[in-house]
Image 1 (cartoon, protein in one colour):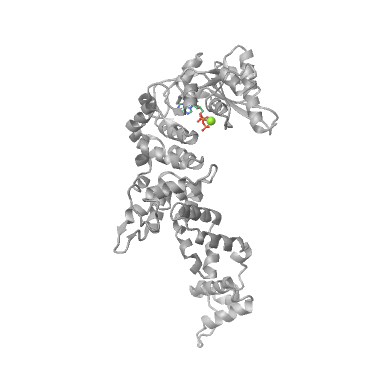
Image 2 (spheres, protein in one colour; image 1 turned 135 degrees about the horizontal axis):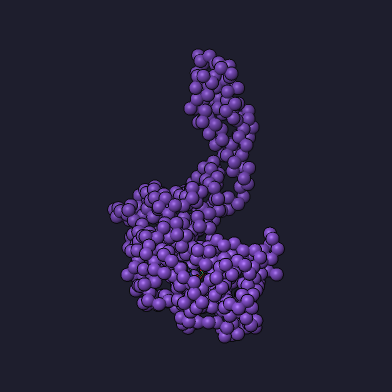
Length: 470
Ligand code: ATP
Ligand code: MG
């Protein structure tokens, strides 16, 4: 049994058990939407009239992680190979005073009340699994729809349940969820939903940076990043969450290199190439690679220039990533992508040693991928990409980072006194090694002797007593 089927079977089993015990129970939310669309749901959630204590008693292996919100996790199957399903008690949320969480939740026996506290009509469908549905058409007959979700699903419309302004005032994060679902499913925002987001966009500042970051990362990595950022722009959310990206609009570029248009259009063209399931670092690297262009824009006599846009961009990206509380590892990689994105242009003039050191960048594949998107998002010339990729593919790791022919100990044994020039000496030897101009330790030492002659009058102390002279 595949894990997909396993998850569905587990949710169906739980819903039927609850039903047999005398409660109402349905598959609910995103999984119903996805089943109706013929997409594979990420998870299957169950909604029930049974209260958490009933659910906890009814099933053997349960975890009451979100009992406060009426959510119990139910594990089925063998230990180590079990499927965990979220079972949520029907509830209606109390007032939202902080724009993030309801101040209280009240359990209810009404499925309709439960649906009405959910965010969007297409996320408000319930599926009765009491009968075994035989086909997709069958599936529709078993759907309970209190909010017009089926019609919106058919028409490709993302619509807030109830009064849109109220729903976004209650929970500001829903505005980003609206953009995420609309772009993922290629739905349009219902006009009233769109208008309400525009009116409430400023309040997104009250949502924690981490949650905003996670929504943005999902938008960037679900395969519809261009559409997501266009919608962020249309709704006014972009200027609130990423003003640095909003500033790209209308920033002209030299047409000979960028026939596509301004920096915004160029960036959107990179986002359009981000595939579903791509890494967060590549996605954010693509988004931020030219973030330094708007502040460095200059109309020089010959053409438009962005002198220093890489350094400025790295500094700006660092600030943005700090703001969104990215981990150190992710920050390092994203900044490396921004910092190195222009180096491909020099690749065919690089010395062998420089090129090999370039290959040492962590996860070089992502640098290649970003450069390719950068080319295809602009003039489309892939010469540098082809060249670097070919060289990278044919250069094995032990050539990129060879065992050094000469070490600091070797230099000491040669009679050199440890000091700042050691680094230079070792670098020179490594360079020659990477260039392929030396292949043995003797050749390495000969190179050092030639390039770094020892002062003839200096009496060389024995290696053991050299440390205190540092
Ligand atoms: P995904 O495929 O991204 O998981 P989903 O629809 O399953 O989409 P979840 O975040 O997993 O979304 O939430 C499950 C369900 O809970 C939603 O379908 C919706 O009915 C409800 N829900 C989730 N977050 C909110 C929210 N902020 N406000 C109101 N209802 C919500
Ligand atoms: Mg989900």
